Length: 434
Image (cartoon, rainbow, N blue to C red; front, side, top):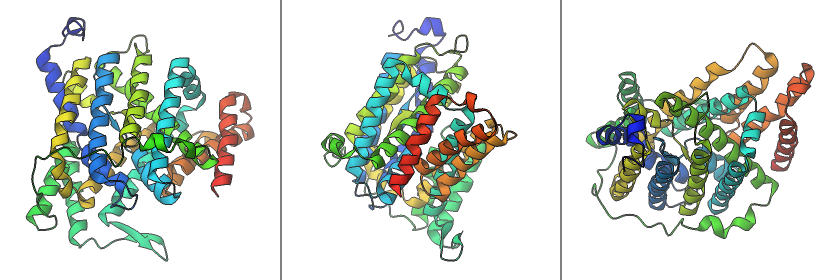
């Protein structure tokens, strides 16, 4: 085992790697309860929350295990934040696409990701998209997630005159969510690893103590059945060949591209695994990520991707795939704690959504706002997402404006031909969507 994971070369040991794996798990364990909450939206999408819980845990376990054994990196995977919101709120609720067909879209995006990774085309597509737009996509998703969190908390509500307004901040559930935000902010500010997860635990306990949440029927239980969601992605593949679904698939693909590339580089740099500014075994890491998406879609969850929270495990000393092996094992163990789903209400998950949104918006600092031709498409990308309540629409608008502003500035030669292709694709996407 030591030889397989190259402990000697990496200067690590079982104890350090185990602690790192536990740390990573605690930092991202919130997804076990947040993902079912987002994908079901209180039952409005039609997905079974118990099945989604099982799919989430298994997708995270299998994806992380593939990364551990194939790429041997201390990077864990799970259904991605942002993409789950896009899946539920934009694709299913806004566009009216059945969740089964949406899962087919996730599956197809994963298969395309595998082909692009093996062929080497993935790098060309990613390199064609300017850095500022990539950062704007990440920040826009952060705003969108935070907006959903404020809505779920009841802090922001709809208003016929102003479209949105401040909600009743004196109601019990809203006060509980606000309490959760304060607790989570304090924990993360103090540097507590797993602050988002512990914030949810404390908020749930407070809700039970004040009678705002019913106590769970138990803590440990049997593993919920996957039957309601398993294999649905394959049964509806014939429904993905429409302009609407092509736009959806492209969005799943692009966002996964950005998330994966950014996370791999960030975590690998922190772990000291980068060599000559390049990531060794990048192909294997990317394949692990794309394979995890296919597995997750098959099980019944939105896009599974690499988690930047893996950096917490690296901070604890994790350097090898053994860290990921430990994390994968803990996700499997978590399958037996499904009864706790009942206490994870919207008021409990809202603080997590808001804080994750804050973390994602920090990408704005990397955008060159002094160049107007860059600032316009970047701004439109990030602001349209929450205003149009659609990640796909934000990406489409930004990618349409970028070639236009660059052309007007006389920098048409700097626009990659792939961006012109995407320009046409997204114009068609918005046209047919309307």
